[in-house]
Length: 452
Image (cartoon, rainbow, N blue to C red; front, side, top):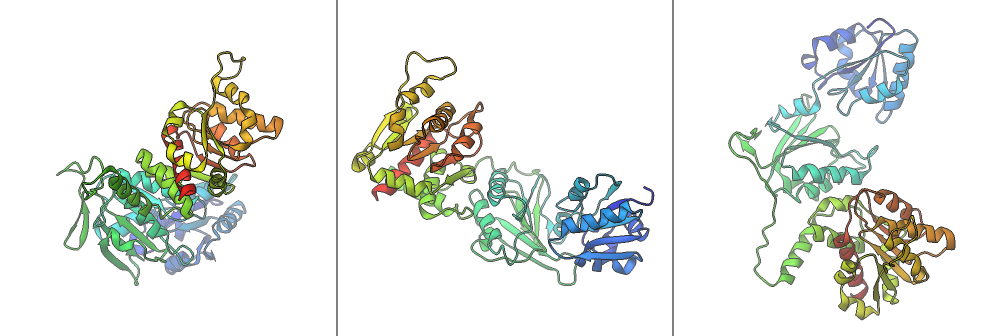
């Protein structure tokens, strides 16, 4: 590139010997070097350019400064630790630099130089997850952790904690422990290649319920193929075994079904700590997770407008449960409902339906006068939810609460989002997933809370 260009330069661990020759060449030929103050200090001894630095959290400002200087004809290097394309500055620069040439100069990624200090924790496939929720919702991070933990590959965790995020790593460990043994090897590398470098080899259980505040740290969580050999973590590529094909919990009891169910529910509750649910919400989510043996739905559950409190109050007053399928009606606990004086009614399916309606949607029209004293429970048909929204818009009538858990691809997301906009307490499962078993589990949890 000619003068008047912008380079995003990866400086790896910030040690001269570990910079590429090309990165050094670019830095030394630059008119200006821009970066976070810590990174500037790491390279200022071998550059003669003007150095401009900003503090933590000022990434956008650094980009603006670098772009303006390049636009003015300067040859500018914007430095980024590790590799600028992996949780670095490159994506932000390229999205902001509309009329300036940009070249990304790679560096050794943090996961690579940190891994080298504790052995070979990443011998094959692995997953990389950041715990910083400044730009990404925390529930999305937990969902990602849940899915990669199930795949039985090593997990690299960056941005594990800070003074404001003391228990993010603990919550992450609680999520991973849904699928991995408490004795799973873990390595912590803090300030790799710096004078204050610190490494630890420990077990997964050692990090749960423990505050962690070091941002300059990379955490390696092993998988079923990870061993500790001579104080080093080593993950083979699968040469010697095929790893786990599934995950299970040893119950340790041979008792009646109620004891097994209680043990299972206890396991579920113990591994929901990463989520910000109140005690009643935990009970609802635990029953839903238990019903389908899938923790990932916990990250997709949305309680709106005090749903649990309002739904429990309506049940205690003996409201009607208006459900979309006979299967849901059959699954709801009759004994709990009868104790509360709650009736369970399925939406009728009329034989003749006008064009543009499904049978259930038109059936809801037939019983719309019941909505204001009912909790609407949908685990199958998104058209019922869309029709409920139309009825509200036309009449102002809406249910006491809505369990919005339809499943499918056509209209499902639209229906759920429409319900969330109503001035009514709702339980929604984001995305296409849902189903009658989940809806029944949620309702039975609410009935239990109302009774007990």
